Amino acid sequence: MEGHRLSQRLAFYGFRKIFDSINQHGIQKGVDRMGLDGFIEHCARLAASTGAITGMGGAVTVIVGIPADLFNNLAQQFRVTLAVIYARRGSYTVTFEQLMSVVGISLGLEAGLILTRELLENVAEKLLLRMGAKVGGRLVPVVGAVVGGTTNYLFIKSVGASVKRIPL
Image (cartoon, rainbow, N blue to C red):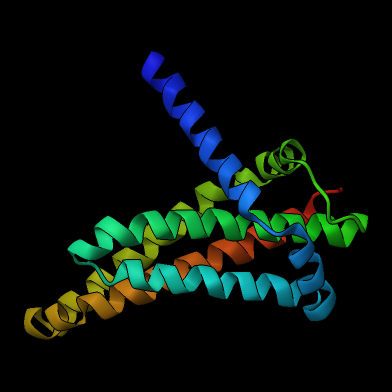
């Protein structure tokens, strides 16, 4: 039980650090310049980049890429949520607690996204098996990069769509 509380405190601290590193005024400028949907697209592409790198596999990717991918995905999720809040309320100054309450409401989409990632990985695996082991073995990093990038992209896009549906 104590280990669970410790991991919750560490996660909270990590989320807080990510939130504190975000330039909320920069989000306001980005939304004003690109529009809300353009800003969400931009964040989705940023998330896709680390997803593609992480999906390539390898020891360096596991050690460096996965933590960077998790950090980037959370940062993009927070940025998209803050952008929607700004677009709806007209204020770019949001507290951590306000952000987390909106993020909490939007979390209902995660279960569907995990299913989507599993589906993408299963399809990729079956395609590789049909192509043959030799050719498939060479394509594993490419397919992994596509799956990782696509999953992150779709995740951030779905976060944006989900948060836009929340009455703020």
